[in-house]
Length: 304
Image (cartoon, rainbow, N blue to C red; front, side, top):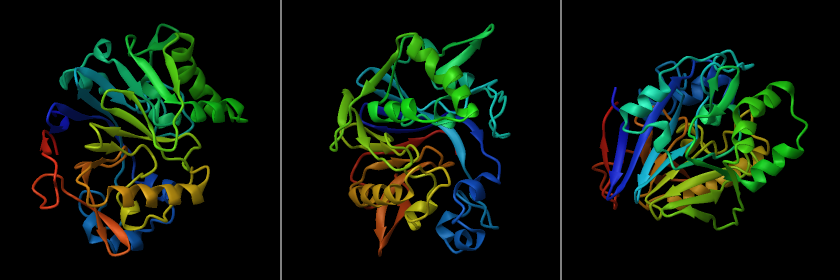
């Protein structure tokens, strides 16, 4: 399948699929998004939930081309890695083939942005090479926020998380490829057209990624699923600070509503991208192309 993509001027964003997460992921990850609640939100069906109220979730990266720069935002779970979650353990997906089909070799990537350092966002940082894990994108700078790094450096991590750092984070640091960005309240531009915005709560140093002077925004895990637009108070079982996560989500969605900024969810299944509109006291996600409130020249192409 071709990569699903969105274009605006010279900004091109492509979704690079890794895997669809199993049905039990939703009840575990977003326990307050019960089947009855989800079934009561018809706008979620059939793309984002099935008729029984089961959420659909995926893992993927976004490959971004802007001003000649090739950027990859988040790197999924990775192949062949020992993981405590059975759905993530020892994966064997054609992720790199999909990246190549979208026109990018690992050597082409200039910048890898990590919204946060959770297992399902850092896995393809590295690949197996004999008995070692080496950087998958050898010519790229890998960037995450300093607050994120400092949090985990001081944390009392359990063994599965330590193992993830050993195979997917420490090798890029040891190779001298990891940069830590100081992210002030108004954000910071780390490359032309690529800006990190602080979105704490899920993790202390979590960032969203604004692209093309606000043309698009990649959520990371400050929004896991479109049900959280309808019900922003729904939290994740792995939010480190659930109250802050809700405040961050409400503030972010309010700032995007009606602006024409393309919202791209890091775990949203296809169609993955849309525009945020107010709906009373809450929000809704509407298609990016052809919507009367879409003030930007977004065009969606490809799969789904």
